[in-house]
Length: 200
Image 1: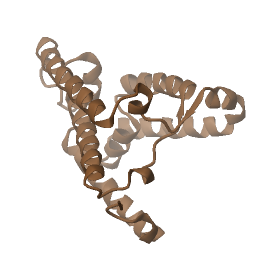
Image 2: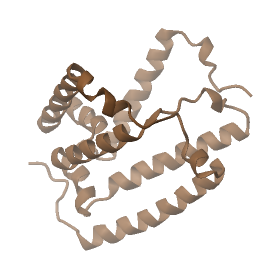
Image 3: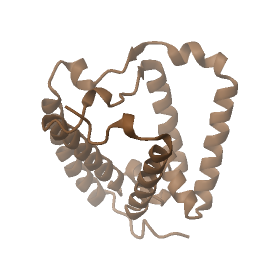
Image 4: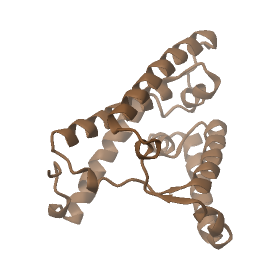
């Protein structure tokens, strides 16, 4: 079994170029989905626009199915796929901070860069605040290190933790996504707002 693109044959320059092209494509996709609008993004939390849920659930499912089938056809080596290391405390605290920042500012880190790139002032302010937060965290890291590193579980997968196959996990996520899409459609009808995408 071998990867589609053997990493050991890619130079650092080509690796950066591929990442740059993928980044442009990702930013274009975010913009086309309307994710440069803080109103649309905040609409997820208020129920009147669930585009965020639909797009990201769809992206996750496509990526999971892609990896599953590429692995089955022996076109990719799953052993070289990086799995983020999991720190329970960091995940919970970071998730809460990001969630609060998302609903207050109307952006997540990725969408803020996308919106700032096309000149949105609120996104620039949001991105500036994020950079200040990153700097302060880095400068005060010794104060937070013990909390940050606590309850380390390593690079684990949800399927492994639950003791089920990757295929069954993907099936369950697709079922959950189908339900969430239905809930999203119901919420949009119940909490509908006019001209939600109109920029001032």
